[in-house]
Length: 380
Image (cartoon, rainbow, N blue to C red; front, top):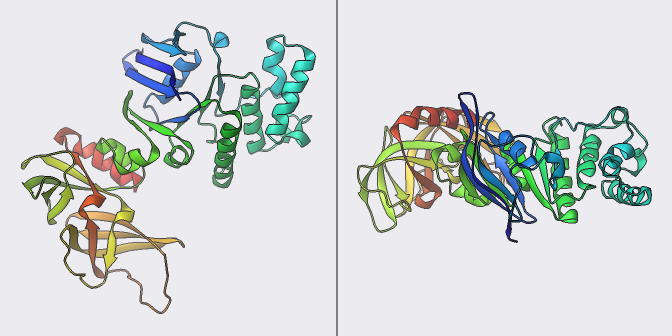
């Protein structure tokens, strides 16, 4: 797969607000790429620039090497599925899907063939002659996707397409979207603020914040190896331990003096030096809980903590633990749940362990700490 969509140093300002700030981005042919970020981060503005609904103040948009920056939306091989679907209420499902082909003055026989194939692909045969108010939210979404795909775009833009659906329907439609992509094979650019949607659907993710893309990578790279504290806090739950590097242990490990907890060992892939401030990010599922202190291990951290809350979730239990000045979130999967074994419960003091390589170390910038920690707390 080669790069076929390129944004080069794209910026867009609305009065004093910089919505998109010098963004460069390449999309590979046939991939599902998600732009993920909080409300107001600039992702929808970037989508509108790609679609041709908005012109950038500076920078270029290229499709297969051709500059389409100033090309009108109706001249681009790009279609958009909107959050509210934007179906024509007075038209049937069949007529909605056929609309773009009719506007392009395609022959009637070709329209019937193309629309029929799309209705079959989307499993809408029983609803072809119904109007939008007569079908469900999930069916409306499939109609909107069919209407976009029937024009054979090279790029399909999906702007928060599942936001109006309930949780179970969103989960089912994610599977359907993945199947549709496998069937048609074109490039999807998916805009969302939902981490779960982006992680489950995407080949690659771009995390946006304040008009910039902070990191691009596969879901695993974004989750396991965040490049900034913002990305670590925004993607899934995490715990931040603040401290300073106090000594290097080897070429790969160092010790961090964590405020109110003490010294812990961490994998030092950033090559930070003694005295550097750090945020140590540890995901909730990386911790292990022990009622009795386990044997010491060279690269295992052990600290005592008190259980202040727990939630039994069926497949796992989520704990809130008081550890020094921190409230840490820990999630333990139930691989084998023994009813005759006393579970860890409220007010119990236990041992909390994690391996040095299960904590991801990020250099800390003091002026951002308060906002980053607040984001981390919100995500938990």
